[in-house]
Structures are given as structure tokens and as C-alpha cells.
Length: 194
Image (cartoon, rainbow, N blue to C red; front, side):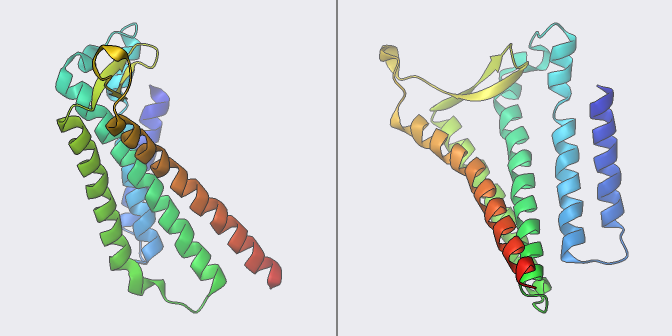
């Protein structure tokens, strides 16, 4: 609990620092929003902490709306933070590859892209939840609710929709890894040439 409080406090202070920074660069904006997302992620762990402190009983997760909305919110903030780190990494790579290129011209497009990405994630989650292809379920071993696939009938098979949801989720996690690794290779190659 003290580690979470330190993380929450540290991320809040970081967000305030970058928000009030003297230079209003694109990177300061990214750092500010990433710190705010990380603070929200830390704050979202309080229901999990309550569960852990109650011998892993569901506590807040007993409420069905919390069990459904908590994983959607938690993973939304987490994924937006990941995509912001990817954008920060890409802009740093552009600065290394082409130092004279002004990235500020693309700032609004990048921010619109992040907002569009957030809306896309929410739309996918709400779509799949509304048709009851996935649902929230409490996992005692994790002390939290997770979005899980709903089996179709008594044959214990999962419908195609749940496979699509699972693949989309995995791609959302795989894409940032591929971009970051490509960025490392490109940056290293450009710096070796200098």
C-alpha cells in the first residue's frame, strides 16, 4: 500500500512538474499526460488493495457494474499510457534520425490520434460487453475482476466474437513492443553512422 501511495504521489508530482514546465514542448506534454495516466493507473489499484486487505474477498468487485467497468477503465488508461510512450519514443527517434525536422507541426495530429485511439478502445470494449460476448468476472487469485470470454451454450466453445476480441487485445499489446524495438534498431543504426 505504501508503494502504491508513493507511486501515486510521485506520478501526480511529475504530472504537475511537466504541466508547469517553462518549455511547452511536445515531449513535456507527453511526459505530463503519461504521468497523469500512470497516476490514474495507480489510483485504480485501490479496489485491488481493498480486496487483498480483506483476505481476497471481492469487496468493491461484488458490485457487478464495478466488476465490468473496472477492467475496462484500468486497461484503457494502461493502453493509452503505452501508446503515449510509443509516440514519445517515435518522436525521439525522428529527432535522432532527422535533427532539423520540427515535430511541433505534428503535435495536434498526434494528440488527435491518441484521442481517436482511446475512443476506438472504448468502442470495442463497450461493443463486446453490450452483446455479452465478454463479461467481467472476479478472480480470487488475482484479487481483481477481468474481462473474460463468455462460452456459447453447453458445448464449452467460445464464439468467434470472443476470439476476435482476444486477438484485438493481443495486437494492442504486441504493436507497441514491435514499434519500440524497431525504434531502438533505427536509433542505434543512425547513431552508429555518425
